[in-house]
Image (tube, rainbow, N blue to C red; front, side, top):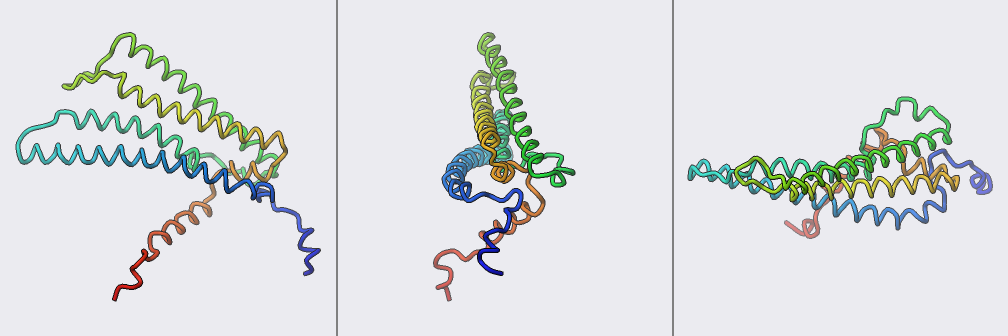
Length: 225
């Protein structure tokens, strides 16, 4: 087949355009940095919780004493970690979408559905943030404290929890704005590439790539006898 014939081959639906391919590295780099920060905070929260639970368990078994707060901290960690997981799942396209018929639609219909999903999720995130703000207001007004031995002022854990929800709302709105920009510009391929539901093949490829990275020899291992 001649090069001229190859150049005339139509672009596949969902494939990134040349312009999108040029923009992708910078966008992907920023997205990767945000995901790395959120994942690091998420991991640090539960790593710290695991240390506290370990100390609590050892103190009970060896010295018959208790910190009387490990379960309370566990609840706070779960609440804050969940809000961080919302953002990570959104950026990784890991939220569940019913996509039985999605791939059967034309590319333009897919793009419209993808845009609706991004905008509706952003609206939901903003609504959750608004409701949470009212909860924070009530907590501050009543100076509520936890019904635990520590009597923790609830504004502290709720403030961190609310910050996680704000991050989720910002991420969702940012992605919704990007989806809207691509839709108005008519960049159907880029919209479908960035916002379509993750397929089983993509999930399998991610797992295999991760496995390959974990099984790759570390620097210096090849020189060992």
